[in-house]
Length: 290
Length: 313
Figure 1 (cartoon, rainbow over the protein chains, first blue to last red):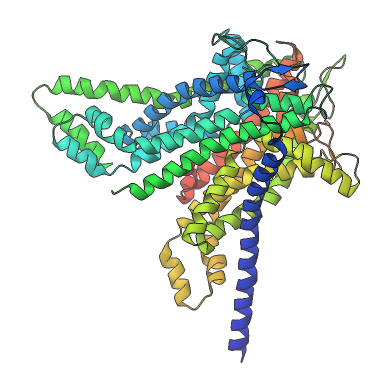
Figure 2 (figure 1 turned 180 degrees about the vertical axis):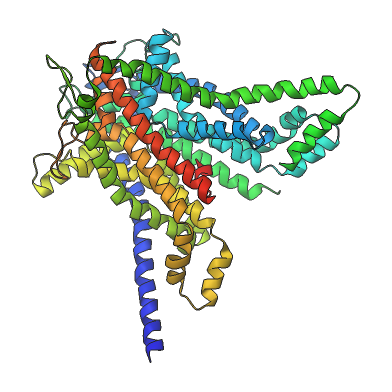
C-alpha cells in the first residue's frame, strides 16, 4: 500500500522539481529575448542612415554616432592584431609542444588568472603602463593593447580546444612522411584547426567591441570633432558613448532616443558577431568527418 | 601526448643533419613558448604597475585607516581615504547577486544536461552564450533606465539605484558563467553511476538530486565562485546601477559604491600622481587580490577534484 502511494508521491516530487528547473531555464531564455526585443523596439526609431553616418551635433543632443562607430572599429581591429597572433601561438605551444611539468603549470596559472582579472583593473594597468609609462597617451594604441591582453585568454582557450580536436593520426601521418614538427603544425594542424580557431577568436573580438571600463582611461574620449588619423589619437567609442550620454550632461532625458539608438547599434554589432560565430561552429560540427 | 614525444624522438635520433634539424625544430618551439609566456608576463606587469602606483598611498595614509576607515571623501580638504564602505558595497552586491544567479544558473545547467531534447538544447545553449556576450554597459543602461525606475515606483523608495537592482543586473552577467561551467561538470559525471541509480529503481529526479548533483558538486562550486568573481570585478553595472553612495548600507535598498565603480568614476578627475590617483590604484590592488583569491581557489578545487571546470575558461 505504501509502495503505490510513495511511488505516486515520488513521481509528483519529480514533476514539481522538473517544473521548477524548466521554469528557471525558461526565465533565462526569456531574459535574453526580452532584453533584445525591448532594445529593438526602443532603438529602432532612432537608427537611420544619418544616425549612422553623421557626427553628433548641438552638444551631443542631436546628430549621429559615426565617430563612435569608427573608434570602436579601430579599437576592435587593433586589439585583434594583438590578441590573435599571440593567442594562436600560445595555443600552439600548449597543445603541440608543452609537456607536463612546472613550466606548463605556471603558464596555465598565468592564463587562468589573467582571464579573471577585472576589466577595470585592466584599465588601470593600461593607464599606468601604456598611457603614462610608455608615453602613448590616451590613444587607439594604448586602448588596443589593453583590450588585446584582456581578450587574450579567450582566444587562447578557444584556439587550444580547436588544436586538440585535430586527430593525432593527422600529425602522425605527416611526421611519418618525413615532415618536421614545425612543417606538420603549419601545413596540417593549423589548417585543420583554423575554422575552430577563427570562431573562437570572433567571440573574443565581440567582447573587445563591447568593453567599456578598459578603454575609459586608455583610449576613449567624450567628444571629438576629428576622425582619428594616427594610432596616437583619442577616439570616441560606442560603449563609452552610451555611458556618457546616459550618465553625464544636462540633457539625459532629452537624448534618451539617441541612447537607445546607440545601444541598438552596439548590440547588433556584438550579437551579430556572436551569432555569426555560433552558426559557423554548428555548421562545422555537422560537416566534420573525423 | 604520444605524438609529441614521437616528433621529438625523431628529431633527436636522426643521425645525419641531426643538429641542423634540431635547430629548425628548436627555434619555432621557443618562439611559441615566448608567445605562451606573454600571459604570465602581462600578469606580472599588472601586479608591478598596480603596486607601483598603489602602494604610494600608504606613505600618506596608514593602512589601518585606509582599509577600515568608513569615510571616503577623496576630494575634500583634508581628504579622507577610508575604503571600508567600498569593500562592503562590493561584497554586498556580489553576495546578493549570487543568491539570484545560483538557482537560475545551476537550474539552467540541469535543464540542459538532463531535461532538454537535442534541438531545444542547441537553442538554449546559444541563448546562454548570447546572454554572456551582451556588453556590460548595455546591461547597466537597462538597469538604470528600466529596472531602477520601476523598482522606485513599485516599492515607493527614495531611489531605485541600490543593492537589489545592481545585483539583479549583475546576476544576469554571472548566469552564463555559472551555467556553462556547471554543465561541463554535470556532463563529466560517469553515466554508469546514473544507470546504476536507475537500475535500483530511483526516479530521474532522485538520480539527479542524489547522484548527478553530488557528483558534480566541486565543478558546480567552481562555477559559482567564477560567477561571483565576475560579479565582483564587473564595473559598468555597479557604476550605473548601484547608486554611488559611499556608505555602509543598512538595507538592501540602500545605494552603495562598490570598488570598481569608485575607480571608474573618479579616475578621470583624480589629478595624475596625486594622493587620490594613488588611492584609486590601491583600491585596484584590493580588487585584484580579491578576484585573484577566487581564481586560485578555483584552480585548487579543480586540481584537487580533477573536474573539467577550469579547462573551459
